[in-house]
Amino acid sequence: MSKFYSKSKLRKEDEQELLLDFCDIVSSIKDPNEAARFLRDLLSPQEIEMLAKRIKVAELLIDEWSYNKIKEYLKVSDGTIARVNEWLKLTGDGYRLVVERLKKKRKERKIDNKYEVSDFEKLKRKYPIYFWPELLSRDIIKNLKVKGRSKVLEELEKIQDKPELYKKIKKELKKR
Image (cartoon, rainbow, N blue to C red; front, side):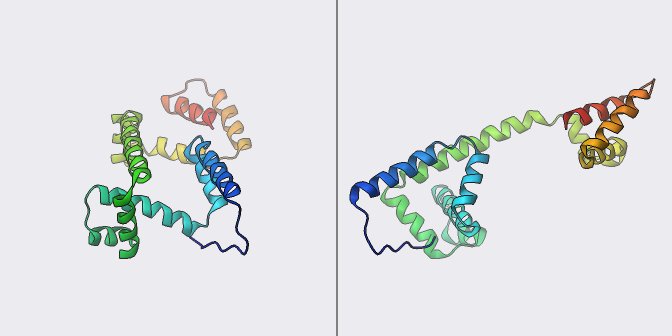
């Protein structure tokens, strides 16, 4: 990150208030989307990547990865790894806290995703050629504009005997 140089020093009270305000702002973020929006406004893409890599370095060091494996995996310098390792040795409470929470979140995501995709959906992904009409219709629906969707819905309503595919198309159209 860029170094900050100030010609005139802030008073200690003002400096503390700024830090507390910043911590309040960060702790008020409610979800990953809000966090991403805030970070995109606050930091450059390079700074965001650098901070994300530091957290990953901390995670890998906690998981006892070697410097060389981390360096090769994340494309970071020995200095970055050493700095994070030093922070982990000195205190590292913040790193350990966020790494622990991150691992917990990942487990929750895996559990949630496990039940989101049915076996039938997995089968469709594995053998798409057998399900091409449905997959093609999904792609077409995704790319339709609102006006086009309403026209397709109108045409579907005109059909008397509706096969299962028509019902799925109608359901997809109403979702979007």
